[in-house]
Length: 135
Image (tube, rainbow, N blue to C red):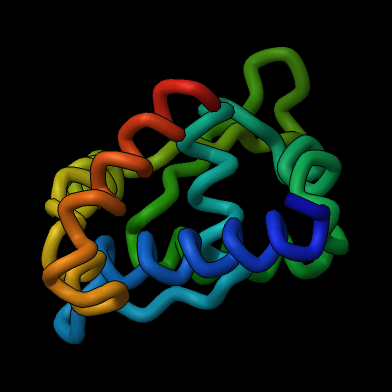
């Protein structure tokens, strides 16, 4: 497999995962907001500059995404105890619960829709194996 094919596979898997973890009734988030939420989930207590460094987004973009997420009650900001000028960001409990609930949705129907019911079981087996091999 070459890099282009691997990239296309990765993008397709991300698209399928997004289908599984969202539905029509879910709150719409921009890709930047999703990236910020994912970063804060992985790195609770981060400052905007740290999120900016890890995501590669401009600081103004991260700050705007954080502001929108705070307005929605998805991120909580608290003053940094060492430097009161900075804020530290964590996921709000409601966001954490929503992420866990969505992450637990089964992918079977989405995979079956993508590859057909005859191949869905084999694809699920291969994905499970790949997930074990590439933790």
